[in-house]
Amino acid sequence: MIDGRTARGERTRVAVLDTAVGLASVLGLEAMSLARLADETGVSKSALFAHWQDKEILQLAVVDHAVQLWMDRVVRPALRTPRGVRRLWALHERRLAFYADKVLPGGCFFAAAEPEFDDRPGPVRDALVTAVGSWLRLLRTVAAQAVDLGELRADTDVGQLAFETEALGKALITSTWLSREYAAGYARRAVLDRLRQLSPTPELLPDE
Image 1: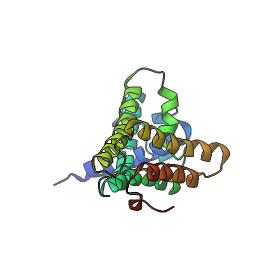
Image 2 (image 1 turned 90 degrees about the horizontal axis):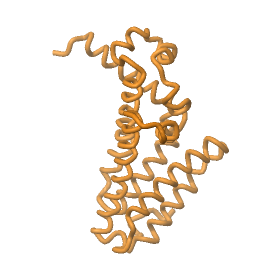
Image 3 (image 1 turned 45 degrees about the vertical axis):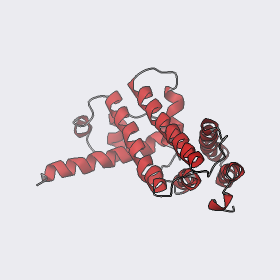
Image 4 (image 1 turned 135 degrees about the vertical axis):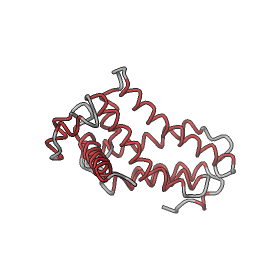
């Protein structure tokens, strides 16, 4: 039987991390502190300290929580799609839906955090590198499966395709939050056109 205090503590931890990921998507990860979270959540700083003893531990927990959110909202739903070009398309489409649904106020946690730590060695940068690297490897793996199934041309450069797909996803965030022009249609069309060009079975993909 789960102790009631333990369950409440876990709910509080998850709720605080939800808030932290949302804040970091707007302010960046470096702005995250126990004091800031105490103000935002109404949870005492001492209670937060029981979970995270310093800023770096908190930042690592926030990165991990952001990864889990991405898995829940983007990766796992897409992986329910049949292997091949449809699954690759689903990963991009679920990403666009994540942004369109405004799951995070800043759009994308990783787009906000990566520039802060790209030239700052340490555990937080390592965690971000691992998270982003895992996403890119997933795109490459799914693209390679599509090649094996004959749903992408045999000469498809899966690394190039993964890079382009990722770049267009990030471009959407930049375009939306700097110019306030929501360019999801462009990001959707660009990847869809690229996949249709590379696929011997374009009928598996949406027409538009």
